[in-house]
Amino acid sequence: MDLTELETPCLVLDKRKMEKNIARIHGRMKDLGVNLRPHGKTAKNIDAVNLTLAGQSGGITVSTLKEAEYYLGYGISDIVYAVGIAPVKLERIAGIMQKGGKITLILDSIEQVRFVAAKAQQHGLTIPVLIELDCDGHRSGVTSDDPLLVDIGRMLDNEKGVSLEGVLTHAGGSYLCRSVEEICIMAEEERSAAVKSAEILRANGLPCPVVSVGSTPTANFAENLGGVTEVRAGVFIFYDLVMAGLGVCAESDIALSVLASIIGHQKRKGWVITDAGWMALSRDRGTASQTVDQGYGRVCDMEGNPLADLIVSGTNQEHGMIAERAEKGPGWEQLGIGNALRILPNHACATAAKHDRYYLIDGTTEVIDIWHRINGW
Image (cartoon, rainbow, N blue to C red):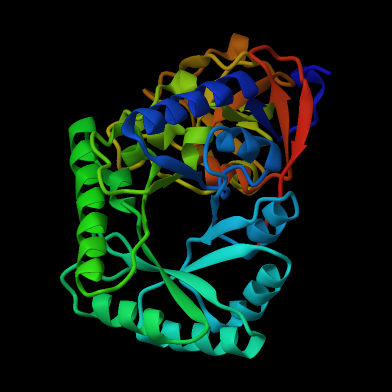
């Protein structure tokens, strides 16, 4: 089968590029002497995640319990659920553990310790927990200078049904950096906040075997991971336009694209109309705040080569409007109605979530395999 035979819109994955991206991050982790705990939320597919686990200790990260159940079904039992826990999810957590999964939770409050411990005691379980840290003001977590850090640690260490495994942080602010130098600084802030918090817990007689950090930008540019036991990252598998805009990868490294068909011309507006709207591309506009705004995606030919300066400038639910960034008008002769295009995504996770399968290629337009993925929570 060839890409030209596929019904559009659909998701294309270049296996050769993906394997190169994975090898690159594996090499960095080896040089820095730390284990990679890959994030399963990007691929949501066992074939891709197995490639990321090669040479690592075997544990993964997830962002949904559906991911946890899916990967456990394929024998991956060491799982960090890296979203703050709510009571309504604990029965399902217990079910995962009763099936042999070691699922580690994260939390940043005394209230969460209480309800996690109560549910664990009800089921006769001990649930491992990491304290979530705020290293950059990006999202959730306690800071290393907050007395709450030790208070949560003591409660986890003393309460039946829970165990203190360590600390976890995510430098989500790295996605807003403007240069590689800024990402390097962010990576050190992430590392130092996690290591300092671990040292505080240990100084108070509390265990802290796990010191977990990670984001794809900081994983790519960290210069020192001393004191860290594991790095979590996920987007590195595919990369995307946001990562390219940060200087983390080149556009040519992006392994994921959406195949779309040209269904019309609006020459008076300078638009080429495709059948890939926001339902196929997502509404993510992550490059809008970067130096180069890629609209809803970068337009490429069937071989994955960028076409002039074309972007998806607008979307409706099932329609995408392609325009030349400088408003010169596209080259109509190469964009005939009925032809197909490939569109690089702003955010690989968001775009992939709109599809149920990957059509694999290996550097050409020949489809070599189909990998199914899961969605939902």
